[in-house]
Image (tube, rainbow, N blue to C red; front, side):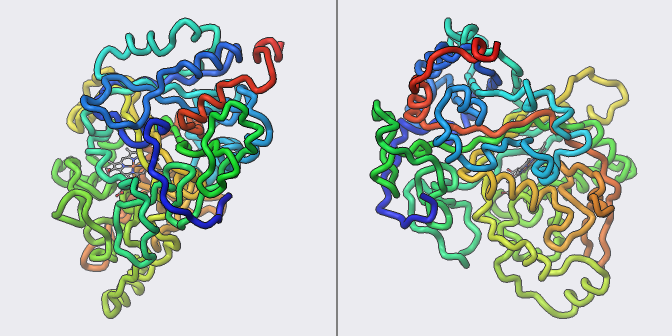
Length: 501
Ligand code: HEM
C-alpha cells in the first residue's frame, strides 16, 4: 500500500505498458479519439480482450499505427469489476473531473467553461471508454480495423475527438511539447530534496506500482489472489502476496480546450498599438517562450534552465504560462536581498521571497503531456485579417498522464495555473487558460503583469477569455494485463441495455 518501503528495482515489462506512457507517437500524425459507452457488456468485453492495444516495447521501425484504451470509473462499473476494486481507485478518479461543484471551481471550470456547457463528459455524455487511435496515414482504415465486427453491438459513440497535425505548434502559434519530464526507467533512488532542477522524474510519478518522487508507492487496488482466478495480474512489488491491478497502469486526464485564436491575437495587437514586434513580445511574455520555443530566461538549450537567475520575473514574468505550470526552481533558496527587494516591496511588485510562497517543490507536480491540436492552423497575421477564413473551432485535446491526478494534474491546474495567488502575484491567473471570472470574495483573476527594470510593471488588464473547456474526463489507463483482467467476466452476465430497460 502507499507508504510501504521500497524494494530492489524490478525492470519494467514494456510489453505490459501502454505505449503512450513511453512514446508520444509523434510520427503518427493522424489521431482520433472515440468516446464511447457500453451498450452490450458481453460484446464490449470481447472487444476489449481482442483490441490490438499498442505496448511500449521499442521496435525498429516503430509501428505505423497505434491504439490506446482508457476507462473512466463509470466504465469500470459498466464492466462490473466489483466494489472492492472501484473503491481502491483514487478518490478524484472516483469522483470524476466534474464530480463536485468544489472540484469544478478548483479546476477553473466555471462560467463558459462550466460542465453545464460541455459537449461531452457530463451526465449521459460521460464516456465509459476512450479509444485513442493513431496512424501515420489513413486513420479511417485503421479505425475500421480497430472497431471490427463487435463494435456496433458493444458501444454507443458519444463523441469523436478529432485532431490535426499543426507540426508541433499549438493553435495560438507557439511551439509546444518542448518541456517534458524525463522518466527514470532505471528507477534510481529519489533525488536529494535540495538538488538542482532536473527533468528526471521517478517512474512511479507516471506508472503505478513503482516508487514515486517520495520513494513511496502510490496507492492502487491490490487484490487478494482469489479475486484473480486466471492469474491475469502480477504480484505487487511492495505487496508480493497481492495482485496489483495498477501495476504498469496510469491515470489519463483529457480536456478539450477550445482556443480563441482570433481573440488572442486581436487583444495583443490592440495592446501593441498594431506594432507586430510589440505584439510578438507580449505574446512571448504570456507564454514564457518565443513562438519558436526559445525560453525567455535562457539563451541555452530550450529546456536547460531554471528561474533562479530571474527572481523578479524581469526576463520571464512570474505569471507566464510555463512558469506557472512548472516553476522549476520555485522553492530552491533564492538569495538576492537588499535595495532591489526593498524597492520591490515598497512598490508592491513581486520579490524573491514571494517565489518561496510556492510551497511545494516542482518535482512532485510533474505531468507527462500527450495532447494533440485540433482544427485548422492559422497564422497570427491570418487571425488578424478582416476577411475570415471560415475556419471552425480549434484548440488542444489536452491529455496528460500521472500516477496521482490529485497531486499532479489537479495541483498544477488549481494551485499554480488557476490560482489568483501564485508566487506573490495577486489578481492574476494563467494568462492563457485562466477563466477570468472574479473570485467569490470579489478579487480579480484577469490581470497580467510584466515586471520591468525600473520597478514598475506593464499591466495587461482585463485579459479576455482565450480558452474554453468543452469537455473532459479522468481515465484509468490500464496495463495490458489489467485490461485483460477487466475484460473478463467476473461472475455476472447480461448487458447494460437490458438491465436498465
Ligand atoms: C489551450 C491550452 C494550452 C495552451 C495553448 C498551452 C500552451 C503551452 C505552450 C506553448 C507551452 C510551451 C512549450 C513547452 O514548454 O513545452 C506549454 C508548456 C506547458 N504547459 Fe501548457 N498549454 C495549455 C494548457 C495547459 C494545461 C491545461 C496544463 C496543465 C494543467 C499545461 C501544462 C503545461 C506544462 C507543464 C508545460 C511545460 C512547462 C515547463 O516544463 O517549462 N498547459 N503550454
